[in-house]
Structure formats: structure tokens, C-alpha cells
Length: 501
Image (cartoon, rainbow, N blue to C red; front, side, top):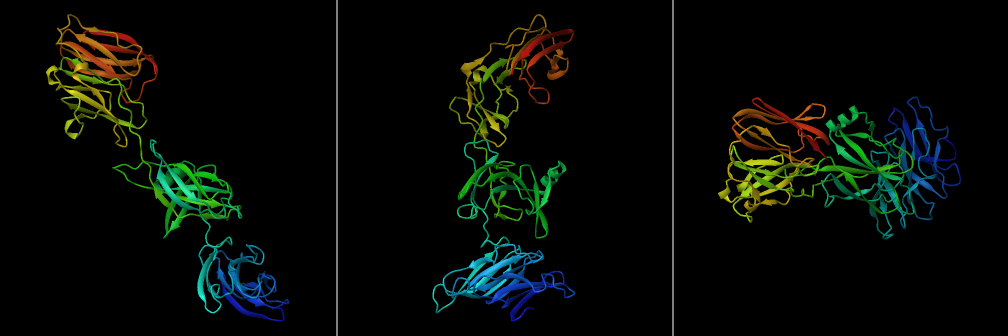
């Protein structure tokens, strides 16, 4: 050591079989704080006479030290640079003895009167927690105060705080509004935050799928250093178990105290699945280690909009078998699931489970229980994948078309479809002179089979079939020229039609 006095040493293990020591040093005209690291062989690693932790004016004394869990240490001391009364300051040294915070340390507490007899422990993340006796309220009595100084030398933990995750009203679902209070380092006078990243929790299976597709994996946050413009999977450990987050948005800081952004969700909450999404925010400063992570919070999105009611609902009498063919135009909503058909005896009937007739995915339905004298009315609604039902299209007996059972055709025939050109559906009429096995098929201009409308034996009579512009897989056929062909016994005929999207 260097004369005249080095006093009140305090030491901890460096985690590598050596030690980190701090002390009060009087080598100058006032008391200062120095530190040294010793390896397992007793060699001094931070200069022969130690490194200066604080040499500010007046006296600094009574240092304490805890590990930063990264090979370095956090050292705190009583400090009189402000005058007669003592304050508490701290400094962090890396494994090589370099100071990581402001020269001569960062203030932990500089309240009025004295702060003394402090104790400290590591916060487990590169900083420390301190508690002390404090006379700021009355010199004759002491209170106890505490503070955290985190790995970057900031008091507390200046992370953003999520204030709400709420569904976006009046949308089709798939998104929520995330609102948060800014990090206190965002606003004046600090203005140290460059941007925020928003992260959504994902399960291990989703994370594995993203990694297989080439999405990069990062461990923790340290090392990001710059705004993330491409998808990333972040992995952490909680209780020894891995958990995963995916970045979904970068928001640049604009020196304000609160923010909100609309962010996408993976699914909507429904009566069947009421699962939540979990989100987390990270405030990023300048440098890869200048980041502060919020506590996670949860929310969910819902589909607020029901589909539009089906258009052009119509009913036409059919024969062989007797009944009513209901048709309507297909809805264009991308989240459409099916339709519901209700049947009542007057136009004021209330749709419900007791009068639900069917829930087809197609835009037509045959009701074999209908007769002219039944007086039935029909209400048809569109239903989306979240179970939201549209208003009802209404059809009553006054608007049903048809007549008495026609006579058996004198010859088998195939009529031109109507309308033609068409969008989205068209009617194909044909008649059978005698019972036959009937095959009615639709082909594209290259001769490829698109849809089988009929493939069965039918009795003699007249028939109407509706093609709704979908192929046999349920996909919408493209605009263009198509051919429909009828085979019934020895009868074969083909006609052309045009689909215009």
C-alpha cells in the first residue's frame, strides 16, 4: 500500500478464486476510495497501488463492495463532497478495474442532512440494493431509506411501464392497442432513450418453427445495440425453463411521457378460446447494454364486426324431388365461416336454435319440407369464424318463384346457363325425357375438370343446378371461359359460359 494510511478495507470474492478489495485511502490531502483485485496467487491485477474509485473533493470513506456477477464489482461509500453532511455515492468497476459510470461515481442519495451506516447487496443484474440510516427529516432522529442503483448507474430501474393492452374497437380483430408510460430517461433532462422494442410471447413450438424458417435466435437483450428491423426470437430462462419472445415492432423515442401502438396478435379471443397474449417492452439507450425491460402484461383481441347480411336471397320451386331451392350471393369477408338458415311461419319470427334449418358453407340450400301452402318465411345470415352472425336476409312466400309440376320433357335437353356472363353464380337448367344416370360437369378452357355438379341417377323431369363459381376444393375459380357438359344416357351436349370476377 501507499503511505500514509489505507484504512477500513472491505472485500469480496471475485468469483474466480481471487478477491476484490476496497478501502479508504489517505494518500492525498483528503480521504478517497480505492480498490484492488487479487488473483489466486496473490498478484495485484489493478495497478500496483490499486485504482482510484473516487477522488472527489473533501472526504469519502466507509466503502462497501458487492459483485456485479460479471467479474467486476459495485462499490459504494459515504461522501462529503457536498459539504458537512454525508451522502452516498457508488461506482461500478468491470473485471479489469475500469470505471463504468460517471467519474467519481453516481449519487445514490444526496438528500438533506446525513445518510450513513449503509448496507448493500447485489441486485443480481449488475447493480446493487442499498439501505441506510437517514436524518433528512430530523437531525435528532434517524429513519431508514433504501434505493437501487442498477447496472448502468441509474437509480431504481427506469424501464417503461405498460399501462394497458386493449382490443381495437370496431375492427375485424387481429390487433390490440399497447399503451405505455415512457422510461423516465426518455424525457427531459435525460433524453437517453433512442427507441423501444415491443415483444410478444410465443410458445416453444412457434419459436422452433420460426427458427427452422431462418429467424435468428438471440440470448437475452445485451448485444442488440441498434434498432431491430427484421424478425428475431429472444430466449430467456425462468426457473431453469426456457421462454421465448418475438419482436413485432420498433418505436423510435420522441421525448414524450407516454406512447401507444396498434400491434398484431396471433389469434382472437372467442367463446371457445379465451386465451391471452403477453407483451413486453424494452427501452433502448445508446450502447448494447443500455436497455431496460418492462414487466410483461397481457391482453386479447376480438373480432368486433359481424359479416354483412347475404345479398340477393331468392327461392325457386323445384320438382323431382319437390321442394324449394334457396340461393344467395356469396359474402366477400375473408373470415367467413358459414351461413345459417332459419325457417318460420311469418316474417316476424325470431331466429333461434329451435327454428335453425341448416348451416351450409355453400350459397344454396334445398328445403324438401317446403310446399306452396306451408307459408314459410326464411331468414339467412352469414357467420364468421369467431361466431359473429350478420343481420338477416328475409324471404317470404310472396317472393318465391315457380309453378305447378311441369310435364315430363318430350326430349332430353341442356339450356344455356343464366345469367351469362355471370358473377358469382349462374343457373344451369336441363330436362330428362326418361330416368337416366346424369353427369353434369364443368371444365376450364384447357379441358381440366373444375367442378362436378351432378353425378347420380335422376328421374324424368326438369332440373335447375346452381354453380357458385367454386371448384371441387371450395376455391374460387378465376375469371375466364368455362364449359359445362351434360351426359344422360345417350344424350351428350356441351355449352360455353363466361365467369367475370
